[in-house]
Image (cartoon, rainbow, N blue to C red; front, side, top):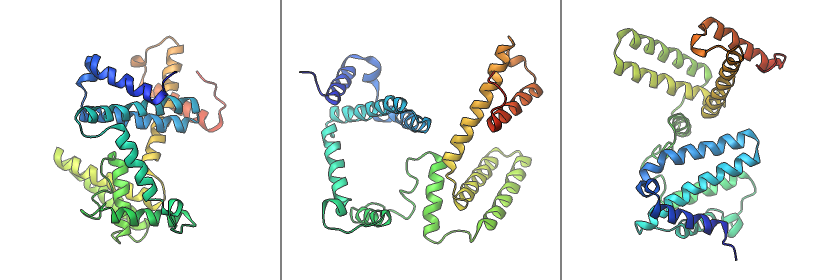
Length: 263
């Protein structure tokens, strides 16, 4: 009888840890960048609208979960069964409106119950902002932290005030640039970025999503430049900035009306 797919994958990871030099050398810390990368690839697959891509990437992320659990098992800390059981218990505990007699008619009710239960579990006792941005990429962390600070009443009155702060931080950044003080320039750039994140919150735009979409747009336009130059039999490095800018604008126009054919 063929093994359950999950059991089979767990067995493969156990063997890799025994027989593959690279897998054997990995630690929880060394896996961090791979876990982050795989999580973002799952997001990219979801945004692509391809279930086939989602299937592949979610499998890769699952492998990282199994990898972590295998290392923990070897260190005699916990097993994948322990992790699953803990998650099962948490879901039951935090959904009393499903598994007990609590009342929750709306999503807001559910979130309220969730927050109250987390508080009882001892989560978030270290400080109002302690867990708001923990372990997230800086941009997303800034967004979460600013939202939580706003809930405590530490916020601007309206978007006009935030825009004024953006102007103030931009001026301070320019001044730091002029001073040629690297440390101060870094600090002022951080302040400017954080203020822009607050601006995104006021206009109800997720800065992480906005930046990811802009990155995708940049890649698409640059790809148009590459393909056009390659089709001519020319080299990218030998193309003038002016010609690249022309092709960039061409790509922008194609995005708007799709009248310019692919190079």
